[in-house]
Length: 452
Image 1 (tube, rainbow, N blue to C red):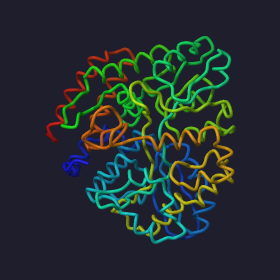
Image 2 (cartoon, rainbow, N blue to C red):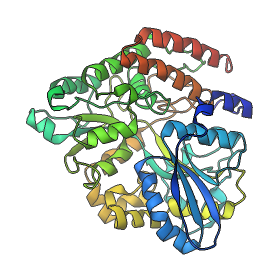
Image 3 (cartoon, rainbow, N blue to C red):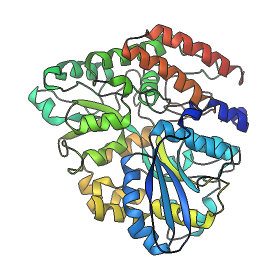
Image 4 (cartoon, one colour):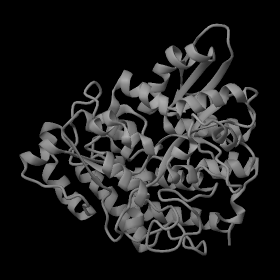
């Protein structure tokens, strides 16, 4: 990480996107209640794994500990704004929150998070050594300590509807190229039946649209910045990747693509309304649950498509962090350690289904017989994708900061989101890719001045 990674509180607040407009948004997901014990507040992203923990907390964690957990669930973009405001402002509204691999190194450097290594290593039952190294490393500060505990880890891969492929006599390779994907999308797109050739995120947000798109940029040979911080947002490689992505979505993508993020694509693909979907490996658990998906048992999983690189999957973890402002650190750690434990995985498997276990964080998960059976369609590709993700060198040239699908600097949340808004507009047909990236280049040049 560059020496200038730390930022002032005012600087981080400045880079949150539309924070004022989101400060009162969202919905309270309810609370687990039990007895007259302590109450902690938890802010989390509205993904299926978080919805599962909300269902299980009252009858298990609260019943065991007497600690009530009051949950607030928000969509990803709103969650990022809300948690950044609270942590950077030292607001103290939340005792625990889901944060990602992007935030933790930055926030730990600024002294905003409790380190969790001490508690994790002191608890033999927690078995910190079982946590997958790539996930721990992504949540580790400069002092070598872990500042958030992984709830689940993921890379990205391509999911495809095997029935639709078979009907057209098509065969998906284990390591497809983007050119092959585009060809498949053209052959499988069927507007008459309401089936898109592919679903790809078009919703603005550095962690929405630009999560998959930056991996396409990487494998096309592009980068946000070169090693010396020279911006390359409108370079030929970045432009070619973005134009390819926009064209693919426009021609063969889902309806309403400019408003479609992870959740929307999960619903679209899970309802059988898209032939392919490139996104997070963590989606597989929901897709293989027959209670939540119409395509359970009908999905194939292969490595992230490539163009010039051998692999292109991202690396991410949603993790539980404890803001320094909490006055209930002991209770907060009890919740975090329970939520990221082996016992919690067993609880999910036995109560909700083994495919829904929040995986990608523990080595032992992949030795559970029931999980191995339920996840046999995607477990190996998931692990392989995580192992091959390279945050230090995800493309064809050296990088100035860590990150596969993001640049590990504070300014990237603002930069990535602003450029994503322009690219989303290009998907909608209201601007061109060239104009979107020309504007993005100017913004990247302003960011680069801080590091030159």
